Image (cartoon, rainbow, N blue to C red):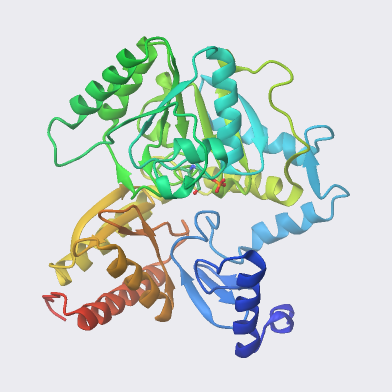
Length: 434
Ligand SMILES: Cc1ncc(COP(=O)(O)O)c(C=O)c1O
């Protein structure tokens, strides 16, 4: 009933999209207005159409849309006198979220500081590290890294167009991410790290890691690659800072650094998205002095309650661990990709990702073609996203509750979109058994 009352006729929907674009000063990335209801991986749009959301709204909808338990949790939290919680008068939701997080963060990360966005969690991480390591101020980051949209994060991010015409401080040194096609990849990155350290002796405060590069193209690497670099950083006195804003709850453990067995090497970790808020976790060594991190808000009461409940359910409902629900979904996604690659051998030319973060290159990964595949999939009823550039990939960040039916429907939609794009552009699509 409530959904029907909220739903818009299609001309009003289109007009709202245009008006929203005008108010924002730029159109939405996708022509999608949520209707406030859904069903599993399906989200209902404000005009009543259903879309299969295979990117969980860029991460957060870990149990899909309209999860009754989370809606109840949200409704109870919404009845609190305090709609948003600050660091001055925190409530039980703040306490519970911090407590649940620290149960999973391992022995080293003893502390947690909540914030409102992933970028802000990274800002707090950087401040804590800079204070501890002062006067060192340089940071090492990977090529293709993405760490957020504040001015500082725009510099740490390796996308020059995301900081066009902004002043930069020129304090970031980049090293290559892992390349599975290069047997010397780890050594190449270690050499680049050494060169940066030698070029600026004593000036580096930290290296920032994304264990699966999200926006950068769902690039993954073996644990030995990270271990070698982290050990080298530790020896040189650099903080090891891991940005898990996209990887959190996407690999078989809550934290990807734990999935990859790097617990002993990590000093500061940031998380967001699935948490419905964000947080910086840090070891005792990186505890900031009293006035360094603060701010009016720590998060919405609803977001904190949902974040804590999500953590509890991931644990109680068996999502974690090598045999858990995330690992099982990973196997199903890999099988589905395998079948797609068998059916369309010339189309799926590369695959990457870890856990419930999977991406692939269609043909050469040309930007315009890849964006067209995503647009065409959406016309066909399923939302995917792009990631990276040269090659650009198509990424899946599905809800962890994705059913067999939803998975099949998603891949069938993707295949239809690939065929339509192939036909339009005369691309090879040697199809086995179509
Ligand atoms: C790895 C990573 N870091 C940082 C961020 C920024 O988070 P937010 O958009 O919440 O500021 C993102 C967002 O996509 C991300 O994927």
